[in-house]
Amino acid sequence: MQPGMTIGEASRRSEVKVPTIRYYEQIGLLPTPTRTDGNRRLYEDADLRRLRFIRHARNLGFDIEPIRQLMAMADHPTRSCAEADRIAQSHLASIDDRIARLTALRAEISRMADCSQDMVRECRVIEVLGDHGSCLNAEH
Amino acid sequence: MQPGMTIGEASRRSEVKVPTIRYYEQIGLLPTPTRTDGNRRLYEDADLRRLRFIRHARNLGFDIEPIRQLMAMADHPTRSCAEADRIAQSHLASIDDRIARLTALRAEISRMADCSQDMVRECRVIEVLGDHGSCLNAEH
DNA sequence: CTTGCTCCTCTAGCCACTAGAGGAAGTAGC
DNA sequence: GCTACTTCCTCTAGTGGCTAGAGGAGCAAG
Image (tube, rainbow over all chains, first blue to last red; front, side):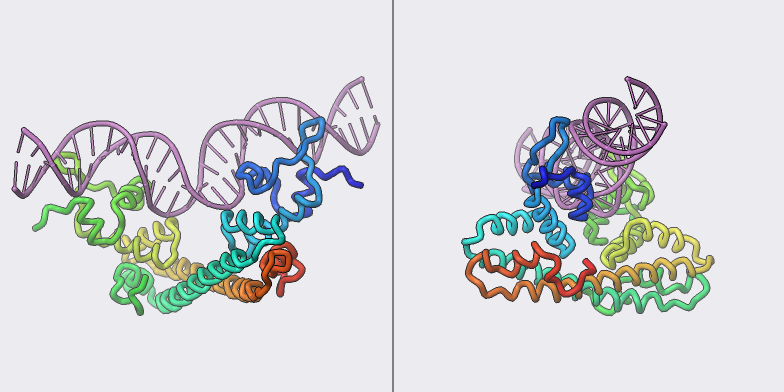
């Protein structure tokens, strides 16, 4: 019934910013839309679903390339989803890794920030940063 | 006693890569070193300490700008270290925030990746990414 | 003297956007 | 029809924190 929507409306309804939508088109993540007589992009509901898929995956921390693969899979519903699983699992592993590193980091910085000195000369923050040997663990 | 070291040696001893050292000089994070007759950079022990400080802080996730401020403070040992505290505390807060977000994310993706279907048509990964409503929490 | 290593400068590329210039098209009110 | 306002268009350049590569020069060992 509707003859499509402008980029502004697609932006509002997908919560993806206008320049970002054009960027996604440029890198081939979105199909090139039809245009009005006045050269404006016209989006359909399918494009909206695609944009929401991208935004959701980006919010979950997926890079563009995995998203491209996931969308290619979503376009072929009868194929095996083992690959989708693999992508999600590998993403999960990298998140676990990041959490572990950040937690170790947190301990280090929290220890460091317990500085009740008055002067830089005796400041733990400065001292610890200058001397790796005073760290709890040497992994970073 | 030593007349200084080359950029290669400074790199090995600080564990900062050669192009990165030159980059730090370019953005004014390192002082411009003296040069040999053959136009090579010559570093002193003070530069080495500075490089290690930077590397350590970068490994702890500090951005360049806070590091610049911290180093400026380290150069004035008799001033108050309240500012150093503030920088470290604000970094700590941002780490806590990232840990919290990653943990929520992990739950989402882990739930999503529990996919024992055969075909993409029934795959939870694809389904969840395409439909934000099926997420556990709406914060992302 | 030649080989091979390190060094030099300069430019361009990475990711995923974001900002801004300069202009055209569409819309609302008068 | 005119004006004002908003939205849209394309294009270029910038962000952070490096990394990669071209093309050449210096320096030590054999």
